[in-house]
Amino acid sequence: MSTAKMTKIALTKAEKEYKAALQR
Image 1: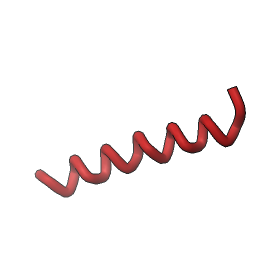
Image 2: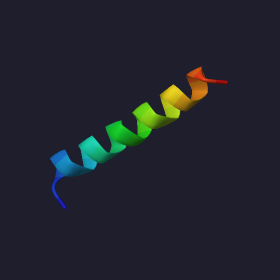
Image 3: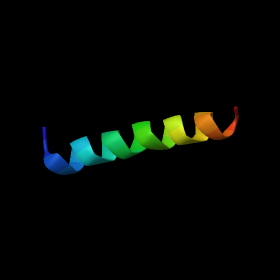
Image 4: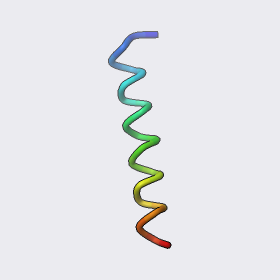
């Protein structure tokens, strides 16, 4: 797996967690 793909996956996960935290 390429570094760019891993970075994108990590950013997507972080964004989902961030949005979930805002809704609390």
